[in-house]
Image 1 (cartoon, one colour):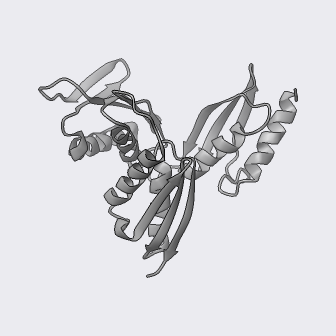
Image 2 (spheres, helix red, strand yellow; image 1 turned 135 degrees about the vertical axis):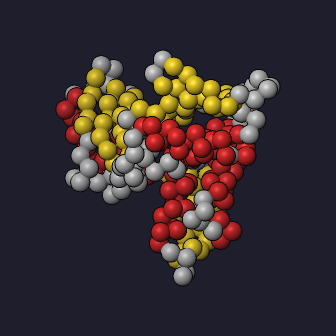
Length: 241
């Protein structure tokens, strides 16, 4: 069994091999604790760098688990209150959540934002240091993934912890992920979804088609990364102004 120093060196080498992570510009704090559990802490440029860093580190021999304390640089620095306000508006305006109760948790207090007459599905959110934590019960994985996407779209979000449960439990698969990616692209006003094809195999997304700018190309890729469960995104979109 390799020693802690050897394992951490291997983790750093794995992270350096991933260009999107770029730990020379975005150094991470790494600590190996009892049970060979790796704690990763720091701020990375975007969601793709975060997911890839976690994947590369978890694949290193000797690492038996990863504690994720990685954060993403927000598109806009916002206070927790402003993030919560934006998230509340987004959830209340989302047609797919029209029959859901919406709750906001602040410390030990829970505020009911909306309570339909019928008891059932609900989404509860909490914001702390730019991190959005989602809990609740929804009727399907598509609703869970949509809530996560909407949370990531808030400009100040630094991370989204999606603990929403689907009731009854659904079996996840590539088709579910593909549906969520297509929905994200369709809802993104900055992406012409009619020109983009999204396919999924083993939770890896491939984007094909054409877009009008590099910005739209990046936005489409980021939307795919925002989908809960996506492990990799291959962006084959062609820019044709």
